[in-house]
Each structure stands twice: as C-alpha cells, then as structure tokens.
Length: 242
Image (tube, rainbow, N blue to C red; front, side, top):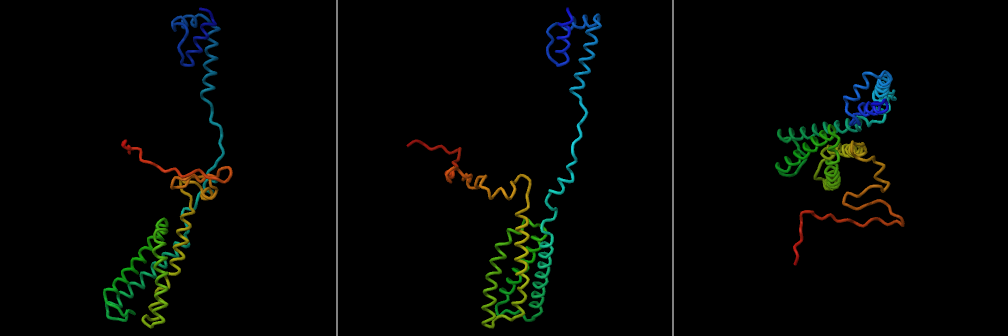
C-alpha cells in the first residue's frame, strides 16, 4: 500500500465513511510509515479543532427582553379602583339587605320577593366586579351586562324620581356603578391590548395583512379587490349521485 491510499483510507475513517481498502492493510502501513503516522496525528488535530470549537461570546439580551416585556400587572390602577367599587357595592347591598330584614325603609314600594331579587342582583354585580378586578381577562365578559344594566337603571331612576316612587337616597346608592362601568371598560381595554404568546401584534390587525376569522382573505389585491369568500365544506360529507 502506498502513502496516498493509506491517507485516503485514514481520511475516510476520520469522517466515519467506508474505507476504500481493508482496515488491516491501512493499520499495517501506518505501523511502518512515520510520515503517514504524522499525517494521521495532524489530521486528527485538525478534525478535533473544526468539530470542537470554543463558544463565541454572545451579547447579553436579558435587559432588552425584560424592557420589551409587557407589564406583569395589567392596568393595576383601574383594577384597584374596580376592586374598591366592588367593595362599596357589596357593602351597600348588604346594608340594604339588613335594613329589609329588620323592617327598615327599603325604598321600594314593591313586594318582598322583588326586593330580594334586586338585592341578589346587586350582590352578583359586586362579586362580578371583584372577580374582574382580580382576573382582568374576565372584564370583557361582564362589560356588556353591566353597561346594559346601567343604561336601563339610569332611565328608570330618572322616571322614578320624577314620579316620586323612589327616594333620592335609593337612587344615589346606584352611583358607584357608574365609575365601576368606566373602570371595567379600562381594564377590559388594557387586557385586550396586551400581547400574548402565539398571537400577532395589535398593529398588525390594521394593515390588512391577515385573514378574517370567517375565512375571508383580507389582504389587499392590486386594483383594490379582495379574494372572494371561501366557504369551508366538511371533508367527511359525500354527496350521493342522483
């Protein structure tokens, strides 16, 4: 075996490839050839240098990532205010309940059952506001209910005050719901704008570079046209021939 064939076999061995000649012949030549022995040592050192390299220094991005991260507590001030409104609403509801139980003036000219229903609703609102203050992602679900209730309540309160069927103190007891509605909206909006993993940034929703949720491609096309609506069909449905 000549040195060229031996070195080709050694190179294949270092790369984990099949040797062109039997390994016994390569080892026999290597045992008696000092030049090939030095070549093998040099090739092994070069291979080790290429495959095992020191780690290159990388920039420290911890501070930049932490600075760009969203705040841990979303809308902390509105949530604290919402919790305070919930506590006031809870206190007013319990006070009205105790006044009704002791035979005090409830401010209602209606039946006891209707009075209890009103107390139950006010207590439920207090609990809902408190839950929304603790878990801000639930604020959006309560917002339509509280908004509709406040709108209807304002209309009825004005009418009852003009008719004299409700006292001023009774109407004033509903005032905490107004700032509660505003704070609930602020909490819901702050949570909606908060980026979450796996969702696109908020500014991407206004560029038209996405698909509508109902299957319509909203990407602008040349000439101002959009791709037509694509209706999804069930893959398991087979239409029978007539």
